[in-house]
Amino acid sequence: MKKYALTVLSVVPLFAHAQSSVTLYGILDEGLHYQSKVGAGQKVSMDSLSGPYGSRWGVTGTEDLGAGTQAIFTLESGINMPNGQAAQGNTLFGRQAFVGLKNAQYGSVTFGRQYDMVFYFPEFLAGYALMGGPTSVHPGDLDNAANSVRWNNTIRYMSPSFRGFTFGGLYSLGGVAGDFTSQSGYSLGAGYTAGGLKVGAAYEFFKNPTATAGKGLFTDNQSGASNLSGSLNSGYQTAQSYQVAMIAASYALTDKWSVAGSYSNTEYGNLGSGFQKNAAKFHNFDVAISYKFTPFLSTGLAYDYLKGTAVGKAGDSGAGNQHYNQISWATDYVMSKRTELYGAIGYQIASGQNSLGKSAVANISNLGDSSTNKQVLVRLAIRHRF
Image 1 (cartoon, rainbow, N blue to C red):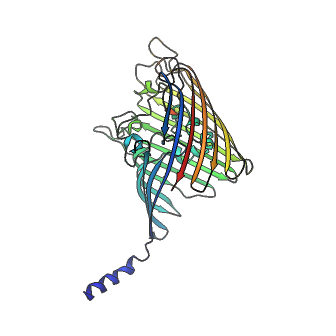
Image 2 (cartoon, rainbow, N blue to C red):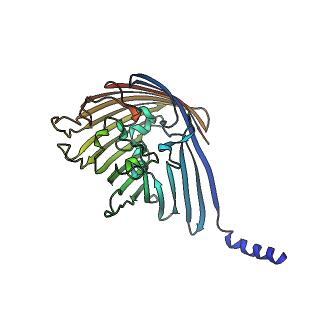
Image 3 (cartoon, rainbow, N blue to C red):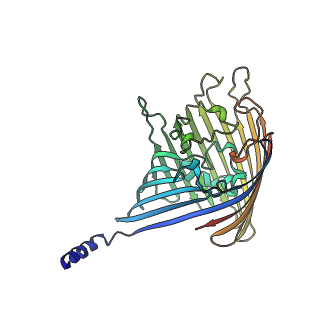
């Protein structure tokens, strides 16, 4: 027995240098939604997924491997609080699930289900992010600036900061029998920070985004749920490619005033013979301004404009020529380090012809097509972090 104890004690110092930590964290963001003109009438519901951050819980960890290198991992699942199910189409760890290595000098390499470069660079600098919440989401979230989709089977690199400049890249492995590149894609991004100015840009391309449920970029959830659900883009299910280019910037004018704005170009390519043009293109502009009354109370106003180019269908050259104007306002009150109360209201007007060749209708934050070209969305919510 003594010999066994000595053997164990002699091994312990070999691992004494390895410092590790595991953290359980989460956000609970529950709100009351009022949505006008959905289907036959108005809709009042509870929602925990459409807030600025979305309800979630996760586990993240690090282990010090020496020489400035760490092993890292994150497992993060969305929570649909009203029914207790996992979010992202009832996908366990549908938000993030990755493992990798990180070095303070060389950056990080991670593998798994991860966010794209739109998330890491331009997203948080856009007018949408300055406001936050579903009322200011870009119509249809066509550029994925509100994280409607994550990328499966990815390898991601993120650089350290070089005097305020950072960059990153992600590649999603695809491949089906006879075509290694099918259902694959890549995403690149970069950002720069200098004082109160922040600038970020990203580009991404994905092949066969509407592939089999659970495999395509737009159908990567367990349930196969797709963000091509509204008439704005549901007619483009035949798209063989998807690409986004986005740039955004924010600037702190003073310690109270901040402004932000973005531009994105989204394209659904190779639509097939049913369309007169081969690609559907969208241009989205947004701008926002915020003001802090106190360190605890802030408010902001945002405007968004989306223009879709005509793709044309048999006998209807104007299909896809659609325009969306959206304005939103939000106020946030910080009650403590962990708890906030906030409210937001958005108003959207649509015009032109949608992807189905019918009159365009409003749809704020992909929460449901309006019965007309106008819609109002109101959210009153409480958010708690742990």
